[in-house]
Amino acid sequence: MTRWQQHADAYEQQCKSLERERAHLLAWLAVLHPATSVLAGCSTGEDGRHVLHMVAGGRQMSWLVAPRDIHLFRHTHRVETLEPMNTRARADDSETEAKYTHLRRHTRLLALEEGVATVVEELRRRT
Image 1: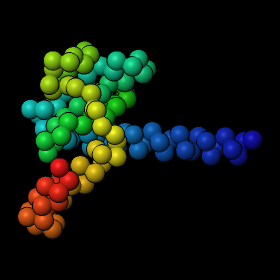
Image 2 (image 1 turned 120 degrees about the vertical axis):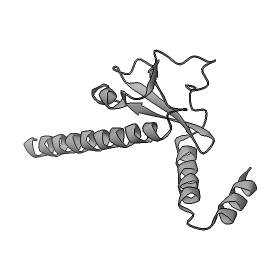
Image 3 (image 1 turned 90 degrees about the vertical axis):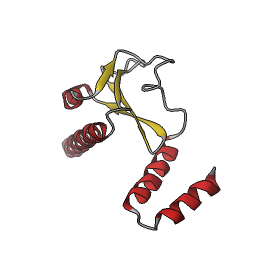
């Protein structure tokens, strides 16, 4: 039992470490997208968590931010809760995998890995 508890504790520490690193990267992204980034109180009552919303590459995306990491987002516009009329803070209406796919495409476009024409053609075929 002790051995399993040690594994569970180590796993929990690793998860917290990864969540913290993720929060630092999200704070950095929010600085790069100040016109579209907003930190909103979470309406689901998830233990003080907030939701970071931003638009990148023409798509709105969002991520949960733990209460201990809120201080990293001092530079980000804040709202108490999400309001339907607030275009800077609307909930994701697509799946997480779609967000990841968009991020991969947008990254390729920005890095010009395959040339702009190739990426633009791929985006046209998917719409």
